[in-house]
Amino acid sequence: MTEGITKTLDMKGLSCPLPIVKTAQAFKELGPADVIEVLATDPGSVPDFTAWCKSTGNELVEHSEESGIFRFVIRKK
Image (cartoon, rainbow, N blue to C red; front, side):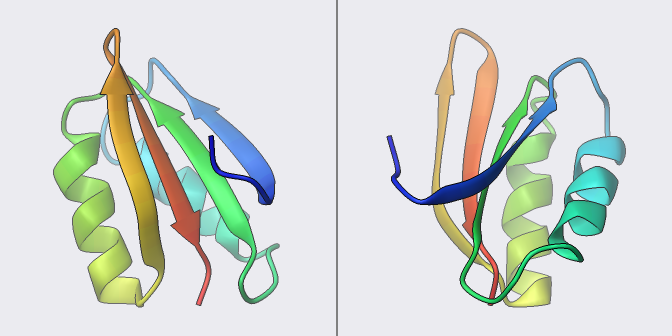
């Protein structure tokens, strides 16, 4: 478990592009270096979050999958 998570977003059951859209909205409320945890069930979220972090410059600290739930920990840059 990553310490210092500022906010957790439960995106389980949502399909692309909603997890990315809602995460981008939540990032507007975060300060620099804040960390957000996103939980999703859409398998497409793995390449989506990887590409989104790369294009926005935010850091994908970790991602994992357990029992069909994808967990992403992202630090705002």
